[in-house]
Amino acid sequence: MLRVDPSRVFLTALAASGIPAVAPSAGQAPAAPREYNAPPAASPPAIDGSLDDAAWRAAPWTEPFVDIRGPGWPDPYVGTRAKIAWDEHFLYVGAELEEPHLWATLADRDAIVYREHDFEVFLDPDGDGLAYYELEINALGTEFDLFLDKPYRRKGKANVAWDIEGLRTAVRLEGTLNDPTDEDAGWSVEIAIPWSALRPPGAPADAAVATPRPGEVWRVNFSRVQWPLVVVDGQYRKEREPVDWSDHPEENWVWSPQGEIDMHIPERWGVVRFVAGRDDSP
Image 1 (spheres, rainbow, N blue to C red):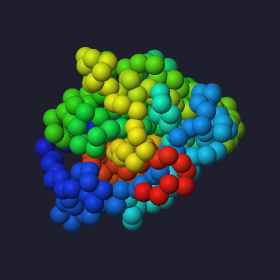
Image 2: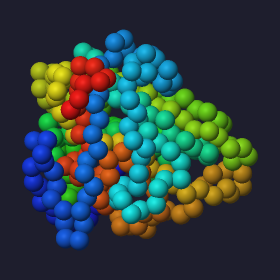
Image 3: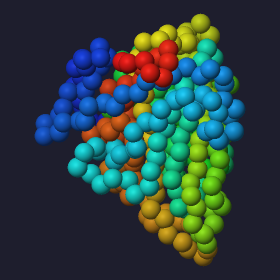
């Protein structure tokens, strides 16, 4: 979750898919949103951090993550990719993150996880750029979830007290956490989000999103925050902290590029279609 200058504004236009898209700002043309067909899970995956269940084998990978700013910026130096599946009760997200330096220290629920390496999920069910959901997780499995009534640049406020009721997550590490003496392979993330939990704070249960029907489209994005590290006294440390909202010593890698360093432009997120089978076309 990245803070931005609230004085900056943006314009919206209708995309060909029928959901909102941001018009290019002066001198900048955001890349076309990436698209993904999410197949149903024939059986629920075990949420253990390992993406070896039948549901995951049937789901395609997203494209490799890219710099949040899009074309023309350096490719990430380690790979990240994700998968989506779903059933009557849950939205499932799986991700693989290459990582030579497994590092995480934040262990409390709703700690500001993006201050360390993390993986993030953003969901806007109706694609209107309002009332959307965010989940972050680190290599310790620490969860940070929040609801936003609208983006920060539109004076939106994050409700960190809101929790995804019934959320299930797990991580699996290929290496040793917080050990600079060796090189690690990476980590994987597995997430199950109940449809029933996706409702604004204080809203009744019947205000939750319904299980999607085949053909339904959501705006979704995934992000990975990666900090340059140094080793001090045998421990990982950030190379430096940002000095203000406009300073970004961290890397920001995403599935669908945003055109700038700001995840909170829902109109530029990717397009996810819930389909009846893996081979369904858009």
